[in-house]
Image 1 (cartoon, rainbow, N blue to C red):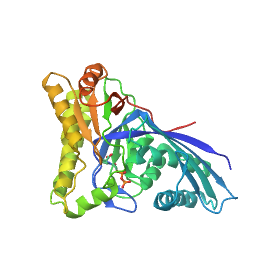
Image 2: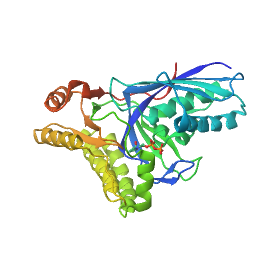
Image 3: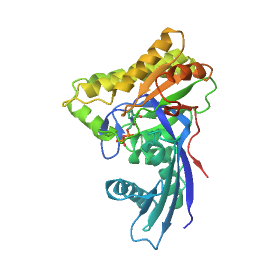
Image 4: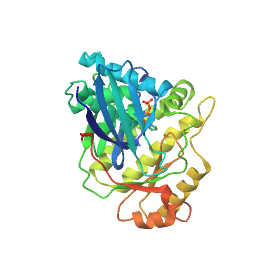
Length: 323
Ligand code: 2P0
């Protein structure tokens, strides 16, 4: 069987996915909306072979073993079932993220794996089916099948929970600056963090309600190409998500002291008239939503607090592609 290589880019949610209705199928409790980025992507090559006794999985030139390898083999089993394929696979995956970024993501990883492995197994999946398949690997991967602004419609089962492009061509000036504060493995994975929150935070139902309202506002803001409204809603949505971790039992947080420093710098820039806003995922790094036009001035100010190599600029990027 032939080797197939696919590339998928990571995405940053403007309206966060936070909490599952179904842990096995990865059906979320709320719909989410993201921007796919050009700078951070994963290239994955898959080849099924009758010679193998088990899957051989390499990530960034390291052989994977243990739970990380099992998670990928488990995902490959879904494809083997669909394709009626009995063979194990070679998987070779490389994260293309600028040095020390700490942004390597399960979103680009499982989107690239879904595309490469399904085609290598002889399946010809269209993008909706690829999105549903990627979802089984990691929720955020559902959205990385498409470029630009992407909505993951929560749905209610395996058939109906998938991403759709909201606007793949981004024809106004918006981009992100990632402020890389810590590239270590996170202490609480997003998977276990969101499960703890669903199980224990009294604020969780309020999160779901607010996220639904924020999604409606975000779509209007994108249609209006209003970067201030997009930023305001994204920032507020991210902070509401983080409020659910502080209210979990036991409480936890992804904030680190430097995350707060970065937020303050962005707030100060805003007071000085710049259109910049922050969002934050299940880790301490901050992503700044801003225009390309104002990026040099924002980088200059951030440079007083952070090293240049901690500041990575990313533009809207494309959906999954075969190489
Ligand atoms: C998001 N995050 O929408 C949210 C915001 C993190 C915070 O999607 O359990 O790694 O594999 O479905 O996709 C990260 O969660 O979790 C994530 P699983 P995933 O981007």
